[in-house]
Length: 453
Image 1: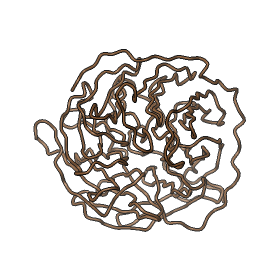
Image 2 (image 1 turned 180 degrees about the vertical axis):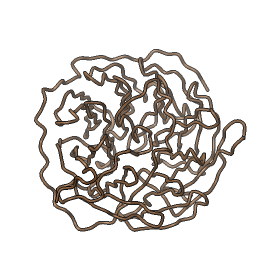
Image 3 (image 1 turned 120 degrees about the vertical axis):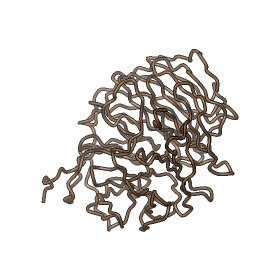
Image 4 (image 1 turned 60 degrees about the vertical axis):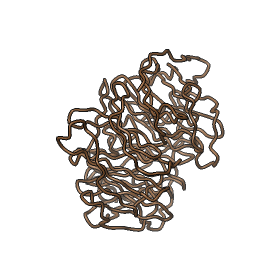
């Protein structure tokens, strides 16, 4: 572990910012209701949140995974929808990428772009009008068009918005005005080796810092940047990091930053980047590791999954009273391999989408790793909404589901987007913000006893 105190390259070029006059957002036209589709759902209770350690308490859907980084919201929609529900409030044409929207008190922020463009845009949360827009030329284009554009989801902390481009350029903006506060070229500064689809991890927020995988050629595995200045606070020892976003947890009073690397799981001290533990996951380093680890606080369990090797899904448990907190292997389930989606846990189950087309929804017992049930479904991303769940499948259909111990019942559905809807939506109160490769949509979920005939 090396502690660094260096000054960042600071850039604040007013010519880069485009403060657009409010545009009239394009109203969405109705989209035909498709034939019934089975879909995937993942469920996670709000109580199983990971510790952020942020110096201020952000509000809104401010980061990857939402307020508690567990893809959940306390809002519970109506269990039945009319043909016009959820009602589309506004729609905007956007560029490519798979970055999720983040939401503040008044604005929605989206990182998008394709074919060499990198755009950070702030929309009015109610009307969809553009309030400000930053655009630059990206130095990296993915080898396949469906992987092009930004993948990392921004983090909104106070009046600062932190983003990382597909070319591993990290920047901070004033969330209100769009002014560029600082920029860091992680490739030039840390000798990054970008995977074939570019940089994808979303930042974790700890106190006055953001934590990121470094994807370095031998060093380092992770870095911490100061939020106010962008300077490097620390860099970890070398390990092969990946697309997967880090999470923050607390075990026996010890805060830990957990990184899902290419072939190992690593726990670091967020204050100085020192290594707490390392656990081998697979013998061969795999390029496309993107699954954000899940933390079940009650079980002291970490769960993660990967597509491109023989291990599939694995669970690790921190034994109680073990001194320095370090996880031990609990089980491996080779018949569940998650590709691009997110996964979630209930009190008893891990529920996730198995790879393939149309794929399967799979429920795995957290106690044993045994499969409880499987159901054929299109690949989807999802959110928990009270006791229910929303699943956005890759064909663009939004499903409302009631997940039970033996299966998931589809209560309602409506097609809102086109194919290639791989991005996890964001939900603030009853408004859902969702996107595909060309559109960002705001849709209002009906409240109970409110559904129109």
